[in-house]
Structures are given as C-alpha cells and as structure tokens.
Length: 88
Image (cartoon, rainbow, N blue to C red):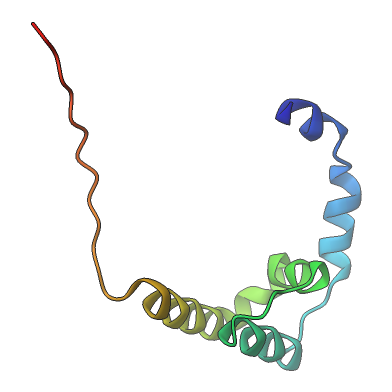
C-alpha cells in the first residue's frame, strides 16, 4: 500500500540530499535545456530543482515549463463538468 511506502520513506535522508544539492545557474540552465529537449531528468536534477536556492532561477524554469506544455497540449482550456444521471 502507498501508506506503507510513505511510512518506510527516509524523509530525513531525502531532506538532507535536497539541502546538499547546491544549484547554480549553469546546472539549472543545463537541466532546463534537457527538459526543453524532452530528455529525462535524473534524480540529482530533481534534487537541484527542489532545493530552495532554485527559486532564484524560477523564471527560466517557468518559461521552459510553459513552452513544453504548449508544445504537448497546445493553447487549450479544458473544463470538467460532472454529469449526474439519475432514473428518479
């Protein structure tokens, strides 16, 4: 079950790994370029992006994320309208 996986997770180790990852502009640009080419990011890339210091490069990350989203889905808006059917 998912709850077992959560209970077994070593959150202190994960937090320490995130805090130990120190992103700089070159690393972020490299990761953003990989993402723009639709290449898979590594676990270390994810640690850099989750670090608080990655906020300094948020504009680059947001622009790339927007471009990937538009490339995959186009400029569309999707709405969910629940439909309830009853025989009463």
